[in-house]
Length: 264
Image (cartoon, rainbow, N blue to C red; front, side):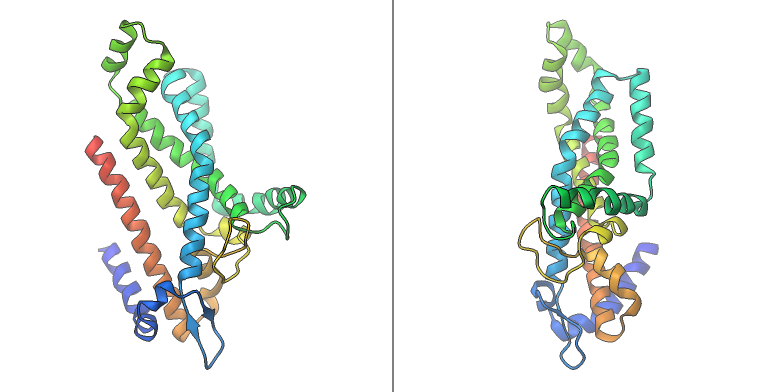
């Protein structure tokens, strides 16, 4: 019921924008709130969202996957695994605004020192902090999937003389592959909707970014930045962006959960 109510509100609020601009709203790169010649398009924010989330997923993948292997295979059931698991849970519980402040005062100056230009804002900087934020989520999902691989298969491989590395590469990963992929799809879906930390670091420009080092905006950040002062057609356009974000994340999460359900 709650989801249906949300969809109803989003659809109703976005009708004026789609009536005025049609499907061009999705592919237009112009965002002009000037009175008398208002023109709004969601493309800069769709591109910014996908670029930021995809880069964050690529950046988080090696560390999260390695950590999940250590937790699920090398240190399974040990004190080390419990401590690492506690640290992962602790990272997952840190509020988004805290990550944003750390990124603003620590990561952004570091980016300037490394010569990335400007004032340290941009898609890449936002992607780095977003990667840190989704590492705990991706690690927990991958670890859960790895732990579902039957011990009988591993013990059979060990009885044939396989090493731990060979068991991981020939038994654990092949049997958990689809679930791990689904876990990263869910992590990608989670990254799409992150707001505060990304808003503080992405630069908040309403242009289609041409590279990962440009400033930009995501669908969530443009809503957070402009919703409070918006009215009329601009408000409807922001609601339409919210509807698109809802649909994109809903589809991605549904695909990931369906794969995990089939694996179970």
